[in-house]
Image 1 (cartoon, rainbow, N blue to C red):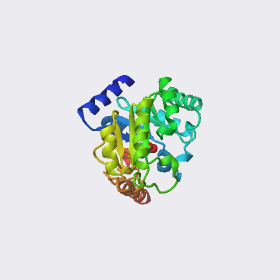
Image 2 (cartoon, rainbow, N blue to C red):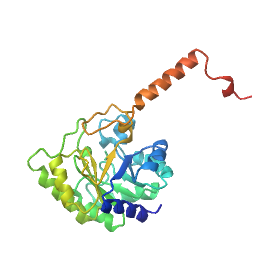
Image 3 (spheres, rainbow, N blue to C red):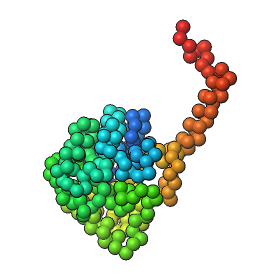
Image 4 (tube, protein in one colour):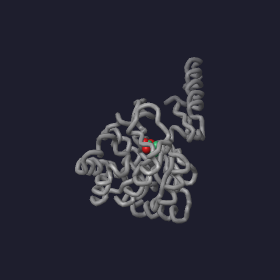
Amino acid sequence: MLMFLKKKKIFEKFKKKIPIICITSYTAPIAKIADKYADIILVGDSVGPVLYGFDSTRKVSIDLILQHAKAVVRQAKKSMVIVDMPYGTYERDARLAYKNAKKIISETGADAVKLEGGEKIFDIIAFLIKKKINVMGHIGLLPQKYSGKYPVYGRKKNEEKKILDDLSFLERAGAFSVVVECTVEPIVKKLMKNSNIPIIGIGATSDCDGQVLVAEDLLGLTDFNAKFLKKYSNLDMIISQAFEKFSTDVVKRKFPQKKNYYK
Ligand code: KIV
C-alpha cells in the first residue's frame, strides 16, 4: 500500500478516536504476523537489547537496523513501516541525518523514520521533512540517552514544560506522529489536550491515540519487566517445552519417524 494511503488510514483513525496499533518487528516471521494486526510496524532500535543482548540501544548501527528493516518491509503488505534512526546517525548534523534517513528509506523501502527528541533536533526534523522524509518523533523517556535502567519521565520539576515544548516543536517541524514513552499520567493528559498529531504511547496511559509494545516483550520472550508491560503470552515457556520435547525425542530415537524420511 502506498505511504499516503497508510498515512490517511492512520489519520482517519486518529480523527475518529479509534486506537492506533503499533507493534515492533525486527524479523520476517514476526512482521508477517504483526502486519495482520498493526497499523504501524516499528523496526525499533530495541533490536539491539532484544535480539543481540546489547546493554543499550546506543550500540545499534545503521547497517544492523538496515538488515532488519529489509526483512520486515518484505513481509509488511499493509502496515506502515517506521525505522528507528540509530544513535549517532542524526543528532548533530542535518545533512548527515538526511544522508542516513535517505539510505534507510531507499535501501529498505520503509515508509518513515523515527528520531528521539524534540526541541533539540527541531532543525534536523524540519530539514528531513523539507526533503520529503516522513518523520515520527519520540519524546518523554528517550532510551538512547541511557544504558541499563530507564527512569520514568515527568517526575522532575522542569520535565512537564520540556515535554510540552518538545511536542509543539515536533508539530511545527512537521512530524506526522509521535511516540511518548514512560511518562506520568497527568503530563500525558496535558499532551493529549495540546496535540494535533497522533500520540502513540508506551507506558503512557490508555488516553493516547495508540499504543506500541515491543513484540518479544508482549509475547513473553524476554526477561524485560516494567510496570507498563503486559505479557500476552509466555513464548519463553512454550519454546522451552518444544525444545525439551525435541531433545527427549532425539535421545529416545523417536524423532525422526519414518514419515520424516526421504525414500
Ligand atoms: O526501539 C523501540 O522499540 C522503540 C519503542 C519502544 C517505541 O522505540
